[in-house]
Image 1 (cartoon, rainbow, N blue to C red):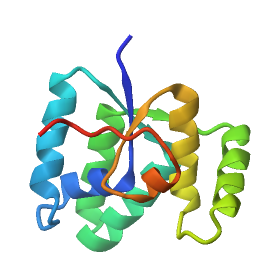
Image 2 (cartoon, helix red, strand yellow):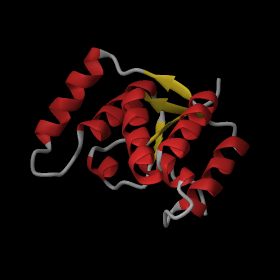
Image 3 (cartoon, rainbow, N blue to C red):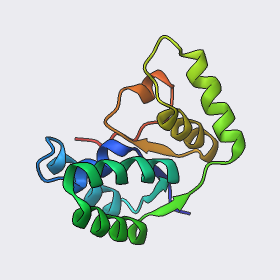
Length: 136
């Protein structure tokens, strides 16, 4: 079985926007994930968040093309109701931190699925989630 990597919004957006400061890194890491035969998984809430960024920052045409490509290339999964409940409990436990429900949901799912998260967001460290960090 291929090892799972859940994708956060930052890298998935950076990979599509050539003007993003992390674009080259995201492209390189995508190739690394493919080379390492990692199964890239996108949680539906992340798909929704990323699509909204692509739509408003890069326009309708790019958003439509991106949506076709991402849904053809990544596995998509839905959180279970128990994942959402665990996520909002984590957010409430960390009320002094600016942790989003998007991130908490992905963190909970990564733990449950024994997967790592491909992210550029330090909040996953606060959430004590397993983060995929490719060797330099």
